[in-house]
Length: 165
Image (tube, rainbow, N blue to C red; front, side):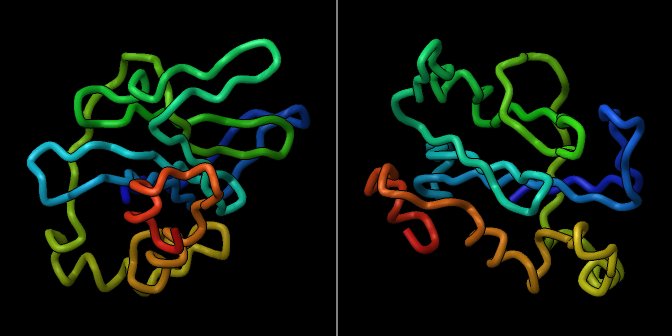
């Protein structure tokens, strides 16, 4: 799970500027075998404004009446999913989404275990409100993983690596 903290989250909507203090967005990258040097990315889940997750899986692209989604591999740059921070409509707020746009920058990864106790303690005890819970602390981590939708279209390979799959 990757997470980003925003001290102030603002976006434009049909009724003006909206926002709130404190926001967390996160993404979960599902791997076939994390022990491998270059594991295969099976799916990417991105947090939505209502605390749920959208998921895009490796496999045939989804098609609607007029178009098809891009192939899953287009969202991956080497071994990293390409993500964008986006804003929604009148009340949709902000969220993460996969993108095919190839600009931006790589960000440093800091593992939970790399943080000092002086950093982990306050994050574990922080109360940013109901809509801004720290996604990766022990109290929230498993429930966030379980919030990712599972349905019958998941392949057995993917389901075997997925909580509740």
